[in-house]
Length: 230
Length: 320
Image 1: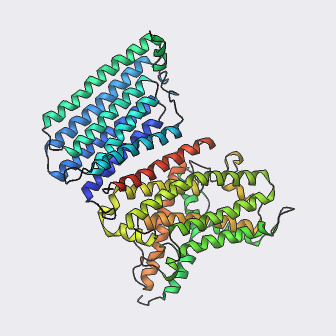
Image 2 (image 1 turned 60 degrees about the horizontal axis):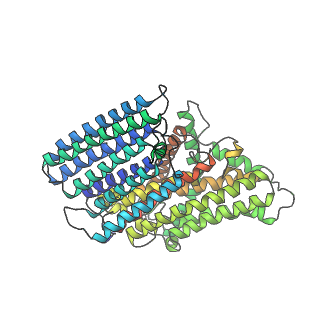
Image 3 (image 1 turned 90 degrees about the horizontal axis):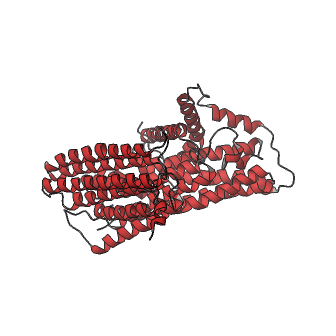
């Protein structure tokens, strides 16, 4: 496609939302406090609901309005609430940051961002090489979703605490929802909802992981798990 | 109001608007900032009075400086006054001298001005002036890639790197405004402008906080008319950067599309209003964020770099 040609307003809006989601993913990479990470995750999840509404309006798919509402209820309200309660329980003193989250970066923020840019570039150019074009699959939003998947992997790798890794995993789910929305927005509602409830399983698993890690070593840092080697 | 102006007069008006509007925009920003802090603040015209006062004072140069120390402010202001010839300040159509340089040409002139001021500061031997110019050069070296990627985005969007072409592209359809590449490039440019004009979160604009100073420290040893020229120069730079942001990226509307006197006057008013609007946003940011520690500025710039690079990436796949 000729880059000087602008896409339509709806597609442009969808692409902007996808780009802002990717930027929020980078924000997570930089953010040092668990409660701010949860806030960024909330913002990202809210954006995916907005994207569902934009696509619903664009392609005339009333199902997606229901999906947007469900996803907002789950990802903007329920999951952050559960995460806050889990992290609140591990707080030694009320109002203090959960242990092991601040300062768990293995890279300095600027290097983490540069590494993230490289990951995003790999995602972008791999999807560019796949040459997926067509009216139903905007190549750009799909490539942004791929970049988001890789950056959220990066987030889980460069952080040493379970809480950030959990948030990284949840944003991975957001990225996959983004890809699903732009490629297969006509998917039956029941399937989309089933994907959403997969997230609940992840929340339960990570909840157990956070509590186990905290109960065993009084810390959320996975660095403490290395001495468990046999 | 139907008199048509010759293009050379309009060209001159572009320079005069920037030259005499710049202190006013600075005054408006200072006023808004003061009101946001609950102070009454200085008069909007205060920067003009400051300049008038400084121009009447005598000029002193530190011992051991060469002619370059006094020439630098003149060269800097001359460079700043050349840039309004290259960018769309008042008109949608290119004026005769408008095509003698592209965006990179304007960038070169901005760097030239900053280079001569830094060199003059080095000549003084004063530690604060040298510290300021050394920091200014260090940080402008790391913002340079951001500017380059913004230029790449413009080049990919329009096929040229002329600011007039981008403004025309943005005006052409709503789809051009909402596309991610355009918004990301504009956001990255805005972050660079906050850095270049010495605003929070990079630098405190007011007061004498020597240890955090970057741009402001460079003029410490100049006095009288030469200090006035440096002050005026930084006000010119601010208005030029705001003009590029508003007239090329964000809101290229309200520019004169004919040579009618009325349209040109309207364009002057619109430009100053847009610059004041950008200034209000800057003042709000000034009041709502803390200054970054010096070594955290790289993080700020890496965020701007990320945004600019994403802008180019989104264009690579065509849909951006």
